[in-house]
Length: 68
Image (cartoon, rainbow, N blue to C red; front, side):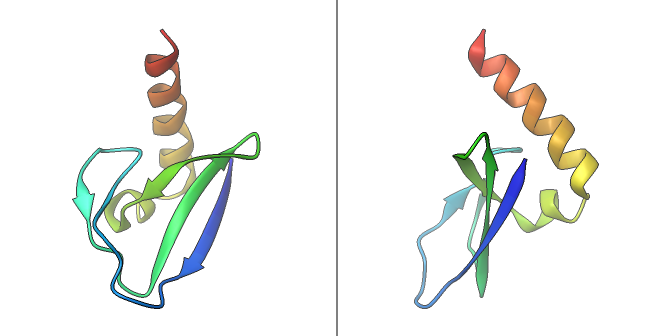
């Protein structure tokens, strides 16, 4: 798992969190989570604040559910 932080230059559109599926509005930056060099989606501030272990565990659960 890798996180990429991108600076937001203009008013971005609302994003959906890849972990909790809630909509959120990025302010100054957006955080995109990658697995195996493939972008999985954006992380909301609430999920990101839970830490790397939380994000990794929830992402694994989400990807396993979608693969079934």
